[in-house]
Image (tube, rainbow, N blue to C red):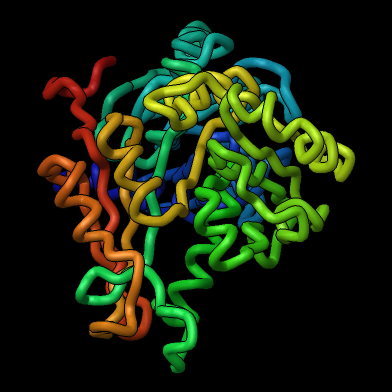
Length: 379
């Protein structure tokens, strides 16, 4: 690894600190180097707050350093438009670094090379493409949404070693499969998404709140796939107002359960009538609708049937599995292995990573590999 790559990897490490706080913005990091010394670091810390480049410039000023003859390493093309904050390009030009090295361009319409052009027009040397693949993997949900207007779908579940997702009612013992640290990580994941989806079976069995805790200002849309409108009216997703809720059912229910639909709607919960696919809610049309509403990331926390439906329909982009060191045996239910054996195809996860939360193992990976051209950074 070259020294320049090490600096960009540091910027990427800083960017990851913003995940769960900056969405729907991308996570961005920035490192300023002068005479082979890091003189400033910054990352985008929260949505609506200063961007990474601004924080890095302020970090330099905090020690009395200037950016003259310095090099900035930025994980994403600096913005040149007026949004919740001023254009980063203007601040960079005013700081006057000699060079800006950018991992990847921003494909959004308001950017898409415009920031790069503005910096070059101001006489700053710009290099693009250093650690490009790593930068695209980091912000894969952002890139997908910008390019396709459809949400990034992450399938998440917790299982025992023998593939059980739940404990049988009345079996005794801990109702949780995963440990407290794993569950804390799940709440961080929930804070990074625009919507969380489960099936009606999960609501009936567990009656979840389906909210991030603590919320830290994040209130993702709670979605229940419920083809036949089986959800109890007293369920927490309907009765609590912590986050907006949407119940998705098919058109046939409109005729048979109109009264229940009206009662749900009177509680402030949306009932969305989905297109139908083999008697079930059509996932593809639902994802199109969520994209139309600007939902960039969808977290699917359903049971085996819902998870395998997303896999079978090629609707999933990523998987996050928490594996607890438990063998549930006959006390376990919701066997993910049996469901996948029936409907899922062999899938190799890409850009995979394994973490441990106490004794739980957490495996994450992408369904499809993110490939970038094997070309050197471009001046």
